[in-house]
Image (tube, rainbow, N blue to C red; front, side):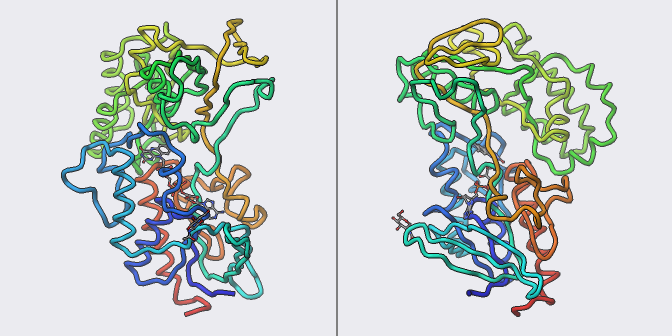
Length: 412
Ligand SMILES: Cc1cc2nc3c(=O)[nH]c(=O)nc-3n(C[C@H](O)[C@H](O)[C@H](O)COP(=O)(O)OP(=O)(O)OC[C@H]3O[C@@H](n4cnc5c(N)ncnc54)[C@H](O)[C@@H]3O)c2cc1C
Ligand SMILES: *[C@@H]1O[C@H](CO)[C@@H](O)[C@H](O)[C@H]1NC(C)=O
């Protein structure tokens, strides 16, 4: 059994940020990763045209900024390069191909007993650690809804995490299910590459957000009645979201910022309800703060919807072979189905539920800002649905909490 002070599960942005903060405090730790690279979600399970949706100053990990000459909205490859540089700078060396299978707290010995499996040799190894940081991500498994008749579909039916590029679908009819950022972006990518593209939008579309930590605190004292004045709209441009984040930094009221954003969006896009896009009752920032759902940032999809290049349908009622039936009575044949229907956390699989700080969905039971700490030296980083800004915040706070408690450890 190998003894370590801090055991970190996962080498995505959350695990790496935590490791960097611990290194700065000279606290020994181990990072294990089930895949053979860092940031496997970004490297292997995202589409080619992906960019960060939020301006770079809101997407930094602790202790390192993006290069000055990098664009405001970082491309996927540049983000991966930033993470590679981050690992080099702090000399982080994760143990790859190692999947954590179970973590149990040993009450008698006061340590976490961790079992991990080498994915190549199949061998199991055991660790004992005083602190355990779960950084396995909110997005560790694709979520595909249970739709009647899905098994009867003959074409390709995949989750957005397996989608790469629209050029694989030229001339095919493709139905994108889901109208969050991935759905809107993939529909756009398919349509510009010449696929006959449709999208399922279950109204109201979830509006997007902004990841500013203090929003959720501010929004507690906001009267819902104000939101009634907000004009009908929900799709934002990235510039609008950027503006909103800057206004919010000045500590303008969330409702006022939302009002400005929605008004500007309305002027830019007009009323989209006749195209099947209906705004939720809350403005984008309030919605993010209250529900964790993010605003859709338009990459040109709405223009293609208005032109009719992307068809909009309501919810699916059932699937019969390649015929998709919609709840409103429409039906249409498709060659491929693309589920941009979000992700699930799998943190519960390694962290036994009964003693964990997580609920049955693998997310923290306590709400932000009390989401990051459990009992007996257990922590979660990257589970506050606040993107990279939230990850940076969690990593810093967890590392300094470990530092404050390390005097009492077993293994020092
Ligand atoms: C398509 C997409 C776009 C996004 N765009 C933005 C954006 O523009 N701005 C923003 O702020 N946020 C964005 N996010 C949200 C968030 O920033 C990313 O999801 C980010 O990668 C989360 O980092 P993480 O380290 O918490 O999780 P992950 O990146 O998922 O990393 C977790 C790691 O843990 C490993 N792991 C899981 N289980 C185990 C196990 N049992 N044992 C060992 N290793 C394990 C996984 O292999 C993975 O490498 C986006 C998310 C997605 C999915
Ligand atoms: C991880 O496993 C892959 C094969 O699945 C192998 O190519 C790679 O070299 C391994 N990496 C490490 C660091 O063991």
